[in-house]
Length: 230
Length: 205
Image (tube, rainbow over the protein chains, first blue to last red):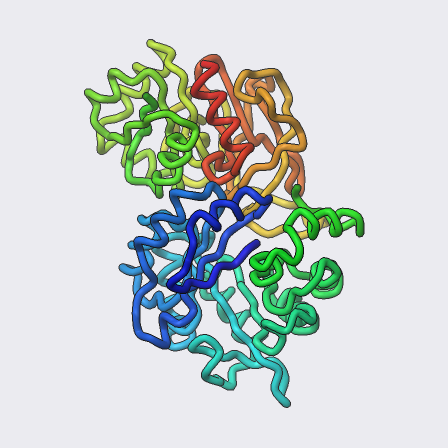
């Protein structure tokens, strides 16, 4: 899975190339949408949807059924919610009822505190004090179809996924958990699947800057006996 | 020209985009007259079985679809829920399906001893071709497709099974009976493999 963070230089052709490089899914997050109080660009979603032919999740600042519907109509397959779900957990259930659980991804951002892994909101800028695993369970009960779990403690470090956080959440819920944050080399993916019990892994920087190709990571996983679709 | 039936069940945009990418034109419609002149039909769909059948009835599409599928025998491809509608009944609801391919649709049911798998079956999975069909040309059991579904088809006639897939047990992931075909997965989301399958449907039938 490859994540794209929106910025003004967002390059759709590049995302199409990524679609050709054995990517399994694409997640497009406008991470500062909530902070800056704007809705994710519908036009960008529509352009990307036209350029790719793989499952496509969109998130960032989505807080109403109408906005979600607009993005789904523009070509998104799944909607990812984060801060809006923390503010109003019933929103998860409303989305699931309207579009089906398979459409609803709850993104959980967590940091390691002295009390354990806790949820942060507003692109990681606000500490909520909510225990990450409890929140994950709540999301599942309310109708989330998947959890996109990002460790803000390891995000950007390239030092590996947060294995203990991932395992804690994966063992807590029965819905798929996508681990994100910290991937720096192929070995990290092996760890997050074997020790972390993740159902999928997401990375951005490692692929964007062409340090490793998706094929290289997949080849490595296969060589370690991890069953992946190739 | 590929006619895509629009009966208000889920996003059709990705099917349109994929066909365009392959180099063909499509027409998205719920207009009976336009469907009457269709040469090749795709029946997409995501959602609830009963609601889908209700929409087809309300849009007066059952008659024209029967005309095209049974009398004129134009090639028809059902995708996901569109495949399930080809059945006679579904455990998901009380409505009768189109009944073009003998069989029923049931929810995944894993026995207690086997590993508890997640429902819906969501993600990439491979196919095992059971019989030869131009639809599967250049595809094999390493070809992978994107699935999102909680229910699957059970064929009454084994000769209608086109391919199977493993998820907890072996289930039917594609069917075909003469001009009528159905795939449980989403070719429009399955990258080069899906592109190959749709190209086969367009060019080889």
